[in-house]
Amino acid sequence: MNSPIELSFEKSPAAVLAPVCVSINGRFLTQSVTGVQRYAIEFLRALDGLIGAGEIDAERYTVNIVAPKGARDPQLEYIGFHRKGRMSGHLWEQLELPWFARNAVLVNLCNTAPFSKMNQVVTIHDAAVRAVPHAYSRAFRTWYELLIPLVAKMSKRIFTVSEFSKQELQNWLSIPEQKCIVLKEGKEHIDTVDADDTTIARLGLANRPYVLAVSSTSPNKNFGAIVEAIQCLGDVSFDVVIAGGANPRIFAADGKPLPTFVKHVGYVSDGELKALYKHASCFVYPSLYEGFGLPPLEAMACGCPVIVSHAASLPEVCGDAALYCDPKDPRTIAEQIARLMTDEALRKLLSERGLERALQFSWKQCAREMWQFIEKLS
Image 1 (tube, rainbow, N blue to C red):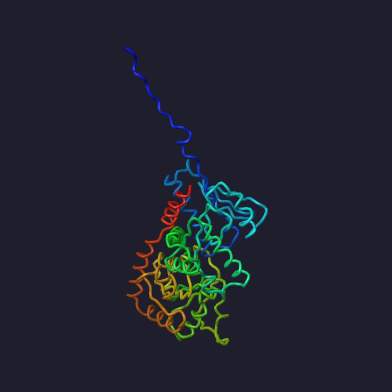
Image 2 (tube, one colour; image 1 turned 60 degrees about the vertical axis):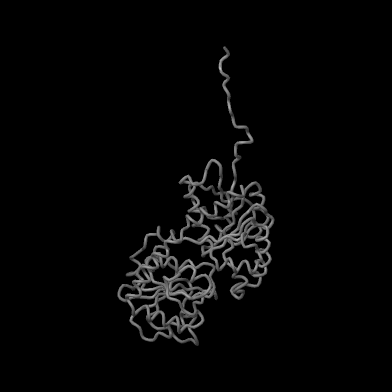
């Protein structure tokens, strides 16, 4: 009697999935850190964590940052970092990056991308160059109004950070609704920072309650309205603390001096900023145009009540956890500050609501959802 035939099944080479390369456009690592660069840094930290946790198959996918010379190394554990090329800026991005990422899915996180690259995705944060053109130089506007439509057309997917920005981009770029995906920003970066509580005594803020604001010379941040609101307040029993590089006194109308209770503390570290959020009675942010609005989210995550404008994406971020003002009327800003500073119960309510609201925003979820689209391109 013949012995049984043993069958051997082996996977053919075609059945084995080929490794997939994913390249991250690291040009942002040569730039100073504003909201857009913060988004990219925190997204990559979250993505690195997903790889480390095994949510992303490290054997199937190789993820590397490709950056120009002079770029800062973000020092991630599972995502590689490579400086390549001789050029810098837009020239590097348009001429050299497409070659370095020729065999990869390219991920662009900071508005711009090579317009000659087909297999790529891009995050476009807002349509500010169209909505608030006076905030930018003519050369900047001209280049972006040429580049962004080309990038939007060539990219497989466009990500943005709010429903407001999605509508703005659709109106500008006439892109299909299903091509533009909303992935909201996160707040874990402020959770992981150790608050430098010595900041409060060092800056002389321990003796009176204070209102916190962040200064900016960008017109859409509307910082001048905060200064006008301060001048409407009259004599008050609290201080107004201004963090950031722009001295508030240059915004004072007709050279009118600001009250002595206004304290400009200049640039602060992340730890100092968290301490300022934690100890502030409220945070004021009457921006005219925001693609998302990270500072109010940071404040809410620290338990700080917020006053924001009823404009752009800010109601979408803050929901019922904020007081709202008319950003074009400094008197309403002053009224909301006075209301909140004299109502301890309201401050407590908004603090609790803000902490709860902040839990809805996660860098890890942002990275996880974007990765689902990247996988489909591989």
